[in-house]
Amino acid sequence: MSIQENYYDTKNRLPEHVQLVAVSKTHPVSAIQEVYDLGQRIFGENKVQEVMEKYPLLPKDIQWHIIGHLQTNKVKYIAEFVDTIQSVDSEKLMKEIDKEAARHQRTIKILLQVKIAREESKFGLDNEEARDLFQKYIHGDFPNIEITGLMGMASFTDDKDQVRGEFLTLKKLYDEFNQHKKLGTLSMGMSDDFPVAIECGANSVRVGSAIFGRRDYSNR
Image 1 (tube, rainbow, N blue to C red):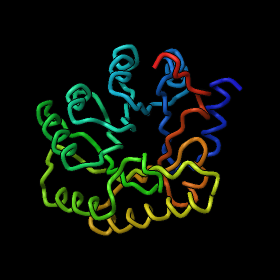
Image 2 (image 1 turned 135 degrees about the vertical axis):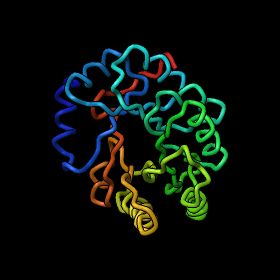
Image 3 (image 1 turned 180 degrees about the vertical axis):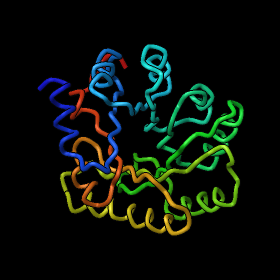
């Protein structure tokens, strides 16, 4: 199937209330432009260097989301234009984002990334760390940040019951936080598991290969 067919197929599988983040990492500007021309405006990238290369070459109304692990020393390169950083997994990173947002006189939206997978390789806060940062945010510690929700990545496994359980764990925390301050985004699910994520309450999904096809890492 073509990128266009893949895109429309993906969109048709999403309920109206679910946001699609088209994950364009490793894919060329031409492919992103093609999906943009179909109406997509939200794109996700893993690496700062890659989004910095693409940003000047594409329409400025694209909402760029950083979805990969972000080092604090890289925040300054994207603070001027990034829409949302989905992968905030430490207080140190939050402080840096807040500082750089202030420098550019803007507010940067973030999601707290919570570790729900059993895999050690996955990044993320544990529930208590997330609660602590959320309370500090509510009390005004990060005036140039807006926490708009939570993000999580399930284990890479064929066991759908395990994946469902991990997603439901994050949904429970999301509901808890919503009692204190209304959040808009629960970002769960990728190309292989987004239908399960939506069943579990996700209202934002990160879909790459199902739209763009297999990634080419040969030049990475």
